[in-house]
Structures are given as structure tokens and as C-alpha cells.
Length: 235
Length: 235
DNA sequence: CTAGAACACAGTTCTAGAACAGTGGAGGTG
DNA sequence: CACCTCCACTGTTCTAGAACTGTGTTCTAG
Image 1 (cartoon, helix red, strand yellow):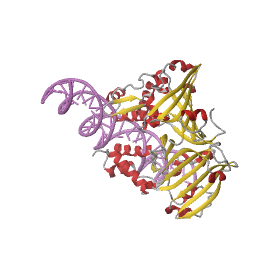
Image 2 (cartoon, helix red, strand yellow; image 1 turned 120 degrees about the vertical axis):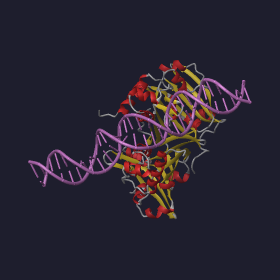
Image 3 (cartoon, chains in turn brown, red, purple, blue; image 1 turned 60 degrees about the horizontal axis):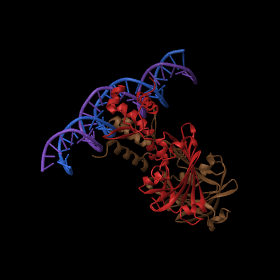
């Protein structure tokens, strides 16, 4: 019995939540009920719940209950959002042009993002087969890919992103109306749903003249966002 | 008695730490000792300590004790650290070459960072006058700039970083032993001490072939780190 | 029909112990 | 002298309760 009980309980509950046994917004059984169910003290159970709370999986409200955290809140809590949401948050008008949509098993979506009237991001998104069909007939000029996925019942859990600098090359340079050879960011983002399933793979080319990455680091807080070069907070 | 005991204790201990009664690296009294001192149970005291641990103020080690987090540790807690610390954490050997040191009021330090034997980062750091004198005679091949500042009694509170893609140009290209025109990251980082005073201004050029930015986004956690291109965790 | 009191139920805080699990030093043994 | 065991010390996990506070509903008096 090497791993502590509270950790086993936390893992078990997390699995149940991720498996969909308790859905976002649902109330979990009461603490006393759960503690009896697992055969541990209230104290021990609360320790398990704290793990889940630290991970952002549940929300506790005194007098009301323990609820599975709604996924929507995750976006807004500064972490699981995309370029576009970052920029909109900062008051920029971001428009989307759909360059191409292809459906061969999975869905391949090629979009250009415009900041005001200047194209700044060329983005190719791939959605694997299971979910592609459910969202294939959306109008992606108006509906965000993530909104469409959410409507189709897909829950986003986490995302992993990799960014390297690059040079603008021809197929994309035309879409961004910029000369080839310019400095750009190249971002590869993989978005995961429940059970570590890949929901979206994004590849984005981002014009370096107009967009930058900002990181704020403090003792315990870290924030990361995409911003426009013009309104830099320092310098 | 509206505020709970554990919170009062946490506040009291935090105040003592910030007041310097316990200095970074010092061990706090044992948990049993503290609980007796405050007249509460071990459980209650541990709840107070957890608050401090969540804030990154203390570090606990089973069998050894509870220690006031060294300012250095703040870096390691995934948030206030630099390229080099990020890379070292991942097990890479990072060496430093000092290209130039100038002292005209402030301190201007020009360094090249080597990953193994390949130069990957060209970094120019400026330290304003007040602190420049105190660290001017350090050997920056062996001592990190932040370590020197820490020794001089400078506390780092936060850092703000801006990253854009760029093209490698000639003065720096030579130092990095790479052809001009390659894709690079350009990072401008400002580090602040107490009272929002600027402690260091860094400008770094980072070879894009070898170094990348990784961001992991989950419901509540966000991590950002520099990594080498070779050991990518996905793809 | 409404205002407020009473109640049921939720999470929260706390006690007083007990036993477990790492860490490092003091002694003993080869 | 080197190694190893034991022990004292640390933080960690857990029990079995008790009392508290916050929230919403239900019942009752006006």
C-alpha cells in the first residue's frame, strides 16, 4: 500500500469525471456520503477533493455542494484559450476568412485571421474522423471551431503548444499578403479531449511584425498571451 | 472569531518570513513545535503550512524539515526562471561565454550560451547603476547574474518578457557561428525588484533551429518553458 | 399571500490522538 | 577505517469524532 488513500480516491474520482460519469455542472455526492462510500474519514476524503480542486476539476460551494467544474470556465480562466481569444480579450477585432475546407475522413480547415484588415495568421486545423462529421457543415466564418466542437459535445481538457521561429514561405506568404522570407512564428498546437484523445491539431503561421508573445512571471503566477506589437506594455 | 485559526497562523508566519525573522533557506520550527506554540492541533497547523506552500513561501521535505523557500527556488517553481534554468532543469549542460563586460554607470554584460558545444543564445544584459557596482567584479562565467544580484541583496519580484520572431543579423550571427538570415527568437525581458524598480533588462537572440517554446495549457495550470527542438514531447 | 423562523443538508474548521515514512547522525562491528 | 544498523528526528497520512457556517426550502404566523 505505497500510494496514500486520498490519492487513490482522487484518481478514482478524476477518472469517473473524465469518463463522463459526472458531467460538468453536476453535483458530486456529499462529502459524508463519499467518505462512507470509500470507507475513510471525512478528513481523508477532503484531502482527495482538494487534489481535484487544485487541478481545477471541481468547484466547492459551502452549503450547496461539490460540482464538476464547467469546461467553459476553463477557457475564460486565462489558460486554455487560443490566439484569437487572446486578441479579442484585448479589444481587437479579429475576422476570419475560410480558405478551404476538406473532408476526407477527418476535417481539414484552412483559415486566415485578420486583425482589422491585415491578415496576420494562417492556420490549418485538423479534426480527426470521429468528430469531423458532426461539425462538417458549420459556417466557420461565423462559428469558432471550438464552439462547434463544444456544441457537438466534445469536451476540451488540455492543449499542448510548440512554437518555433521561421521564415515565411510561398504558399502561405500569398495568403498573408506579405513577401516570402519574413520572420514569423510557427505554432503547432495539439488539443486533447477526455481520455487523452486528440481533438484538434493546429498549425499556424503568425506574422512577426504584428504579433508577439508576452509572458509575465511572478513568484507564483505565470501568464502567457499573444499580443499585437503596437500596444506593447513596456519599452 | 470569523477568520479561521489556520488562516491567522498562515498570515502570522508569512509576516514573520517577510519581516526576515526566518530567512530564505532557514528551517522553520518543527510542525509539532509550532502546533504547540500556537495551541492548535498538528492537523490545523499543517493546513496553515499548506497555505504557505501554495504561495511558494515554504518548501517541505519529509524527514528533514520545513524551509523558507530560497529566492532561487522561486525560479524553479516553474515561473520566474530564465532560458538557462529551464534548459538545465531538463538535464542539458549549458555553458556560458562572456563576450564583453562594460561598466559606464550601469553594467552591460554580453554573453553567449552554449548547449553542449553549440552556441544557441546571444544575450545582452543591462543592470542599472545602483546595483551595477555591487556585482561588477563577479566572474560571470561561473556565477549567474541573478545569483550575483541575490548575493548583493537584490530581491527579484517579477519579470516581464516579450518575444518576437526575427532574422539573424551580422554582429550576432558571428557569435552564434551561424549564417545571417536564419530564423531566431528575439526576447526582451525586464526583471523587476521591489518597488517596481528595474533590475535587469535582457535582450536575447535565440537560435530557432535548436530552441523552441513549449506551452502546456490545462484547466487551471499553465506552464511555459524553453526546450530544445530535439526532445519534443509530442509530434 | 408574504415575511420570517425553523430545519435539513451542504461544505468547513478543529480536536486528540496514532501510526507511517523519509533523513541523517551516533555507535557498533568487521 | 569503512560499513552498517539503529535511533531520534522530521514531515505525512489517517481515525473518529464534534461543532461550526453557509444555503435553500419549508413551514408558520401575520
